[in-house]
Length: 165
Length: 165
DNA sequence: ACAATACGTCAGCTTTGTTGACACTCCAAG
DNA sequence: CTTGGAGTGTCAACAAAGCTGACGTATTGT
Image (cartoon, rainbow over all chains, first blue to last red; front, top):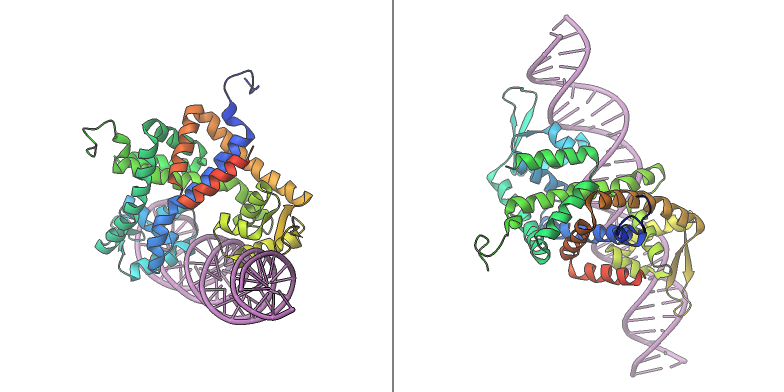
C-alpha cells in the first residue's frame, strides 16, 4: 500500500506529475484572474475590490467581521477597499438591526452592475473550460481543488456552497 | 446543441456550478500557496522570489528575458528580486557563452536547497490532494486547468511540460 | 458600572507590481 | 567600420495591497 509500483496505478503521483500539477495551478490561476483584471484596471480598482464585491454579492448583508474571515486579510486592509467602494456608491453599509455595532454590507445597483460585468467575464472563461473538458473532468477538477484547500477555508467554501441553494 | 436542457447532461454548466468552480479556484489557490508562503515569510522573501527560484530550477541557464516572459512581470520588478537572490548567493548569473549580452541564470547549492524546501512543501499538499481524489479526478483537474489558461501561457506551460522529460 | 465586541481610522512599514529615462555591451547589417 | 537595435541592468518615482500597533467610539451583555 505504500509501494507505488506494486499497489496500483499511482503514476499520477510521481514528482514529475506533481510538478506539472503545480505549474498547471500557477498558469491557470493567471488565466482565471486575467479577465476581471482587465476590467478592473480600466477603473481605479484591483483584485481586492473584486473579492470584496464578489462575497458581498454572494452573501448580502454580511458583516465586516465575516468578510474579514472569508478574505483572510486585516481590518485595515479591507477597510481601505471598502471605504472607496462605499464612497463610489457601489456598496452600502447599513447599521445592523439586531446588533447596532455591526454593519451589514450590500451592493447598490451600481455595485451589482459591476459584479455582473466581472463575474460574467469569469464565467465565460470557466464555462468554456468546462465545456472543453466535460462533466467527468469538471467533477475531478472540483474534487482535487477541494482536497487542496486548508481546513478553515474548506469549511468556508462548503458553507458558501450549501448556502447557494 | 445550444439548448442546455435538450442537448445533453449540461447541468455542470449552470451559473451556480460555474460560481462554485470560481470559488473553488479562489480557495484552492490560497491553500496551494499557503505552505511556501509560511516558509518564505520566515526569510526576507516573498512569492516573487519563489516563482523566480522555481523557474530557474526548472530550466537552468534560462535568460532574464525568458524568465520575464514566463512570469509576465516587468524587467525592473524581476530585477529587484533577482538582485537580492544573487546577493544572497542563491542564484548565479553567468554571462552567456554564445551571446555575451545574455545572462544565464542558475541556482547555487544554497538556492537548490531552498527550492527543495519550497517544492517539497507544495508537493506534499499536491500529493495528498491527488491521492485523496484519484487518477481520474487528477486527469480532469489537469484538463480543466489547461483549458482555463490564456493562449500564450498555455504555450509556455506545454513547452515546459514537454521539456520535463 | 464595566468589560468585551464591532467597527473605523491614523501612522508607518513591506512586497511587488508599474512607467520612464538612461547607459552599456554586443551582434549584425549596411 | 560604423551604426542600429536587442538584451541587460540601474535609477527615480510611484501605486496597490498587504501588514502591525495603537487608539477612539458606539453598543452590547454581564
